[in-house]
Image 1: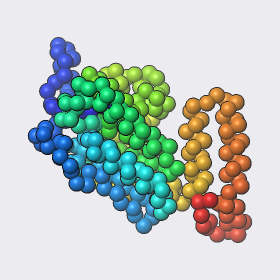
Image 2 (image 1 turned 90 degrees about the vertical axis):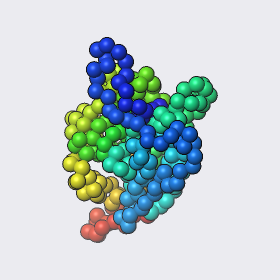
Image 3 (image 1 turned 120 degrees about the horizontal axis):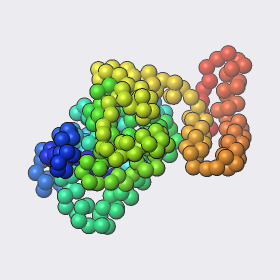
Length: 298
């Protein structure tokens, strides 16, 4: 995961300099970035089981610092183990999602030390892969910018919803950087090779509405309707068997990685495991008894 943040100067020369550059910048002196910050990740669980994990560095458009990345992984681990959590929503404070990695910190060790740059990519990929493989459904809710590292977080989630006027895209190439946490192995699976190249090689940004058309978002709405959209989108997810949700998500994810014969075996085994679960027995009993099921997650 490399940065989309930084100064607002146009990148490149000649005809390329005419590209409109989003104003990603940090407002603090560079030396202050390494000082500890409080509550860069905020963790909330509503009574209905919807967990919201907030990126909370609005003064720098929620750019990812090493501390934010560590705290994000801790929050993801916590949500994964919390039995009261039925779905996890990722959001950004300050009406923006995430403008990538913090270029104020990239200027130093990350851009000049191979081991530091490599470790940043490894840590980002590990954290985002935990989100992708979490047993529970994950939803990225985007306002403002989701670019570079923020885009990688976005495509690590099972679902995406966005404000109609959000700005979403890989963006790395416009700073001569390269994403290390998902674009080459997740993006083509969502939108195909040609569209992936269009996003990655041009650095173009899509609105929330365009992301729905491209297959990157499940839904979009005006910003003032996002809260309701989250509730409406999560409602048919949080009333399902947590065990069956996990097994189905796992099988679909693995379905992108295997040949047909292996997938037939996986599907058969998953079917057998799910049908022998306590929740499957409860689901059938509730149907026959004409009542709502009570899931135990087993």
